[in-house]
Amino acid sequence: MSTSRSTFKPLALGAGVAVAAVLLGVVSYTATRPDQGGEAGSGSGPAAVSSAGPRAGVYPELEKYARRDAKDPLAVGRADAPVVLIEYADFKCGYCGKFARDTEPALIEKYVGDGTLRIEWRNFPIFGEESEAAARASWAAGQQGRFWQFHKAAYAEGAKEKGFGKDRLKALAQEAGVPDVERFLRDTDGAAARAAVSKDREQAYSLGATSTPSFLVNGRPIAGAQPMEAFTQAIEAAKADAAKKPGGKTGGSAAPSSGASASPEAAGR
Image (cartoon, rainbow, N blue to C red; front, side, top):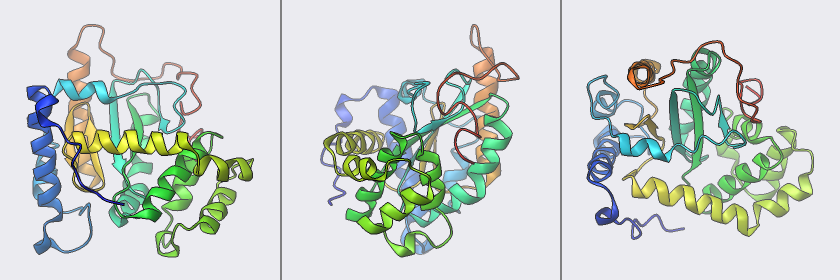
């Protein structure tokens, strides 16, 4: 699969989005440039950390990319949470796995649990055919309410080294508790899965993302599997900004939305 950005149309973007696209692209490159070694999505790029600072560039235009669909099976948290973290990731990306194992569970416990944060997943397969297949499979698992369980299984330590061939994807679906595995296999190869993955990937490219994982936190670009502190800083700043808006919310103990992914428990964490 080509990872060409031939569909990127910067002239079609608003000024703020275009600037953010440049920022995210530069941050992605800085976090993964050759002299740092490793694979896409390095967790040690200083520029990526700085993008999470409370006074760093915030682009309100980017907030529109949050879907806030209470029935979205590829999301966890209240649909009306004051902060939305959008994650663009690949199941064959080692640093995405690091984030999924080391940081995301803590964010869910600390911020999703109290209603502050919503996490929305976007498939961004850039490492070839198996990346693409795993992305479609995750979407297919989501159609049966088991996306986050599949996500956990696919990002388990050593999972990506086993590959994501058809038999392996079937095994992951079974591990995730997908109830109808035959439907899962059909959905994985279906047109709807391909369209959904393509839509997510094109969105990532349009924002200037060049590596995985890449994130938006209420319009704040972050690239790489940064330390917990970088995400905490960005979330707290976004929460404070949201509280200043008319009718702004800060999370709290209100009842969660009725969507399938309204709580960490629903996500199988």
